[in-house]
Length: 548
Image 1: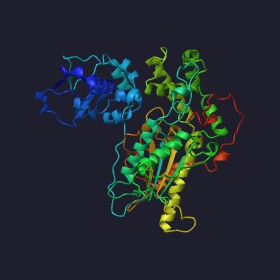
Image 2: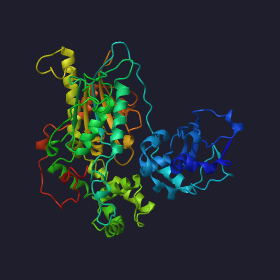
Image 3: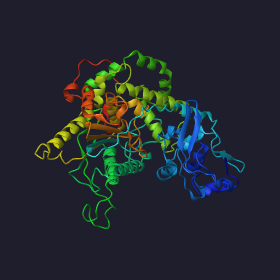
């Protein structure tokens, strides 16, 4: 079946943003103005299949009427590849990526995206032959989820405790390179600050948490904020603190006027103030994985002394020299992440990029950043469990300790001094960073299969649920949320040491498999064990407010 533009193409500019509308169609999704003879044969929400060299891929598609600007489709992996979204509804795109926030930098990758005329028809099952699209789809990691058997909850099964760790929302770059024309004044709140988009993303995550744990037939949390039920902790960084407030505004937006907040006409609508706690960033080994830790620095230096890393340095020597010349600063494998970060964010905001920063250069910068990340977290060759322990172990230990304490108080039905707080507490949240989420996933041993390259995206989060199951006893269920528009999905079965086909892991199993990654005394374990070799160029732990 062909869907034809006929003579309606001239009207597009008067109805919706041409870029947002056309780029989806250029990638093979949706209909335009369906000609009358085909309307009866349309099937809503049908599955769309397109072929790549890795085999067929599928996504749901929803037909729309452009004249009503009802852009209500799904984006292909090609589009998600460049703005770090996947399976995102274009309706969300319309309401979230407004104006020049949309990535018009994508246009060079598509052929003739705006060349629409009366003779153009879109075959709904036609595979695109655009080499750039095909290559981008090939680069997406292959989905290799192990099937997980869902356990049907039984009468008597009880969820006891929920811990959620999330990354902040969209932010400004934490800095830039000397030759970049876009300086700090280009960002309304300055380097590293949460943007309005980031606030909206976190609000959306809060609403999703509300719909998952509150707005259900068997709610786990109260609809209104209760100081006895929830506790929220953030790293002492502006963007994570504001993210926490935005998230809570979305999660607890059903307070009672005059009870939960003042009955005052100037008071923000439905906003219940909820406290967010923090500690000094240099002492926050739970949220700041780059809190001062000399032993971690030693291990990182050991990792980058490996033959594999040395070879990568040599192989990319000319490329790094090229970047150093163009940026006006020394770019190494250890510092290239900062260039990748600012480049990626500027593209999201449609900021002009220098001619030397071609798509090929951009891809290589990203790949080298991902390469170095593996060494930073101890998951490269050599594999360094001790570095994993020092980076992500404190968060893991906090999670396990709270589950154990909660279970103990629950079983004893203890309301004494030791349990007076924990017995009633149901929800403990951490507002942190991509590095925090990534380091935690390395302790699970599933980081590559969960985030599939790079670092967790904005608002990515891990939810760890503690259950008391009738037959199995105390059990853990782990879920992952990859971006603000996604739902949580189970990753328990990807955690090493847990059953590979079940959504619940016995708490005892989870504790035992976690032991080697949980520090006993992080301050003692961070003490140096040997004199430093060459000094690392990696500075993230030196600039906690700016670089994570």
